[in-house]
Image (cartoon, rainbow, N blue to C red; front, side, top):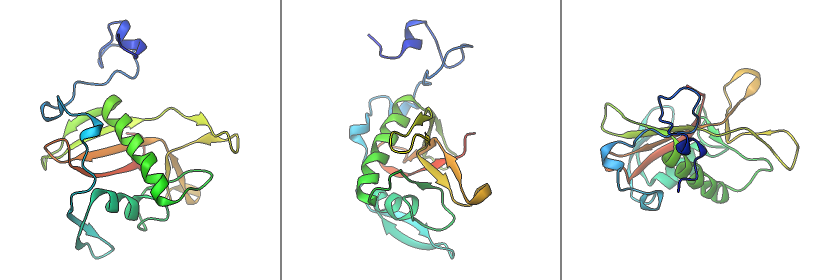
Length: 169
C-alpha cells in the first residue's frame, strides 16, 4: 500500500491534477535508498573566489559551503531558531532523503545525477511565520527564502557530491 494519495488515483508525473508523484529514478538509482548515501568519502571540489582545488567529504563541503554562514555567494540552509552546523547537517540529510524519494531525478551532462524537490511551506511554531529550508543571501532585500532542495549524486547514485537550497525552477 502506498502512502502517496496520488498513487491510489493512478497518477503519473504527467497526469494533470496529480501532485507529489515522483518520476521513475534514473537506472543507476533503482535499488538505492537514502541509507546508501555516502557523505564521508573525500572528493575534489573547487573552493573560494579563486576556484582553488580542495579535497573534502560531502559532509564537509555542505557544512562549510551551504550551511549558514557558509561560503559567500552560495545559497544557505538555515533554520529558525538557528541551530549549530552539525545539527543542521542532520536536517539536510533528511531534506536529501526526501528529495531523493519524492523529487524529480535527471542525469547531468557530467555523469552526475540530480534530484530536485520543493517542500511545502509550513508555519514555523517558534515565530508563526512561513518556514523555509534556506535562503539566498544575494536575493532581493538581502535574502530570498528558498524551499526547493537540489541533491547531486555521483553516477553510482550513492556518493553525495553536494546539496543546496535553490530557487524554484
